[in-house]
Image 1 (cartoon, rainbow, N blue to C red):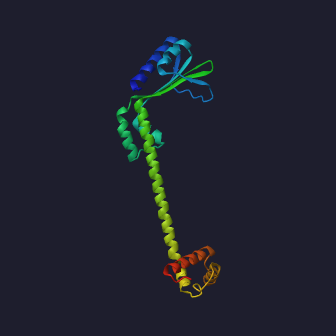
Image 2: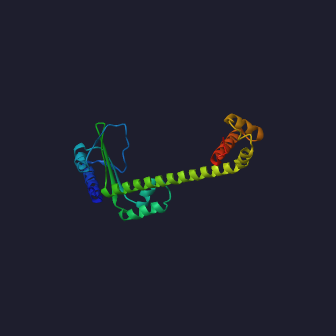
Image 3: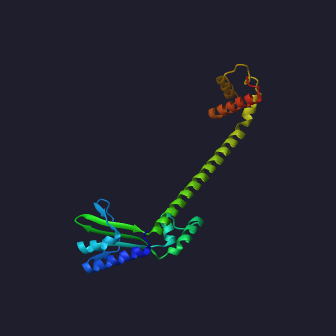
Length: 218
């Protein structure tokens, strides 16, 4: 289990090895996805530097800041209540080393490590779980709003079509024996010439359903 003191000790040994080998340390991470690379454990890095005596070593030692870590994980500029709670829980780790990145080039091969403390991994897991929970809540809220909007549209449509439905149900021709759906639609179109066809068809369907429910439909 890697702790902050372990990473600090590795960083110190790397600095000592670099000084002994005349190697310059650049405090940055080497980014090169196209180069072949090998993973080297942190405790072997000082010996690697002494052996290779490279001109440059790339080293990035990251100190933890709870607010910045939460902002970075969730890609926000300001913390809300949930994110503030997460940051407050981990604020006790502020200033401690959370991650160590080392890299050195040799014969066209990148030798590198990325090591994090066990508690930083736990922080990341909690942040990911909170992110999943927030996404689930957002989806539930979205689904609820969609359902409310759908119900509202249906209620508004029912209110709009109710006068037409009542006229159809009250018309004996609409409820005549053996009348077909096509004839009912044709009748409605002659009765409501200013109503668009889609609305007319919906009014017919609602009227048929109402007749069926009352038991008067043939």
